[in-house]
Image 1 (cartoon, one colour):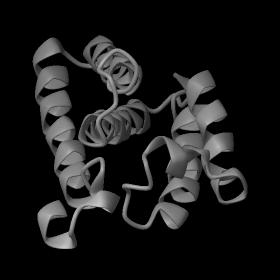
Image 2 (cartoon, rainbow, N blue to C red):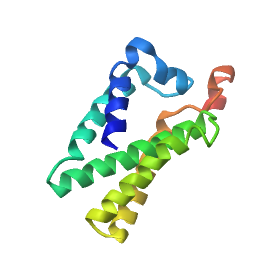
Image 3 (tube, helix red, strand yellow):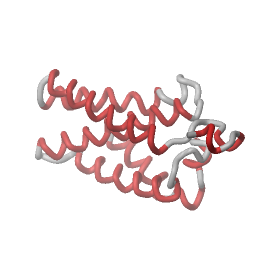
Length: 143
């Protein structure tokens, strides 16, 4: 996880200079100029938190991983990316976070935590992501 998050941190923090995140999401994220750099910094913190000796810090990092990547799955689905390319990429990190939480607690705690934070991420995605093709429709139809 931490290697991937470090790489995505660099992409997110430098997003204002290259615009790849806005291009991939079809500029469907509200506040995308702010979202990607902030998400990049958060991913750097999570990458470091994964190496903590404190179990609570690691579990908090996994909660963020689940919420962030469940939101990413929703985003890729909402903008119309193919399931094999879009949602599956971030979706694997939800599974990784579940496994890490299960190894550190129990399967029941990991399952409940994963379900809760996946719902949080999906809800945030529903609030912050416009549907794919939104530029070609009247605003009232995009809501």
